[in-house]
Image 1 (cartoon, rainbow over the protein chains, first blue to last red):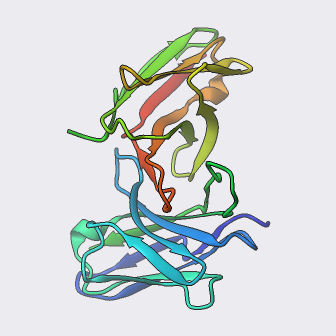
Image 2: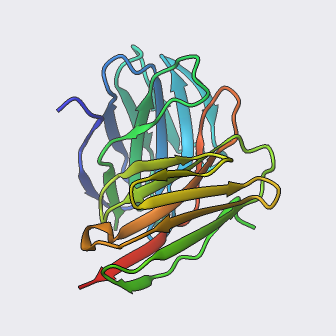
Length: 116
Length: 111
């Protein structure tokens, strides 16, 4: 399967614990995005990487959240001191970076986080 | 006010029906427009882009009215397999290319 992959697919944790999610984009996609989706809502943008550089962060990304893409390939999203409000589906997407006005973003299957 | 607004539904329609979804967006600087489909507990997938001239892909027709900041999706001859959530999406442009999603409209096609 050459699509976007995410690991783990499901994570249950207790409030106050730290969690880390991984995203492997489509090979050679240099743009990588993280979104969060809560029940009954559409995905909301969290952050964006162009290669290894994190170029934009949403105000939704509090200081408990950190994302990295150290070698411009896979990315990790860490949430420290989780809260029940962090329960959501965390989606990763990747795209190429061409001269086209829009490069389609391909989404991974998501990591579903439940904070007890 | 949400940046992209949609009627959340659900829309319950019989097989073969025609159903229309509407969406409005608030940022007049929006540059690109899309409909995504999301099956239950799955990731969103691009259904079609929406162009000012309107565009059609088989049973699906999308329309854009920039003056009214309004986007629509028409599905003709609904199939059971069309049951899903349909997300209206805009892109503002600039370097990020980030997508702004509506809440989605749930469609349930009944046999």
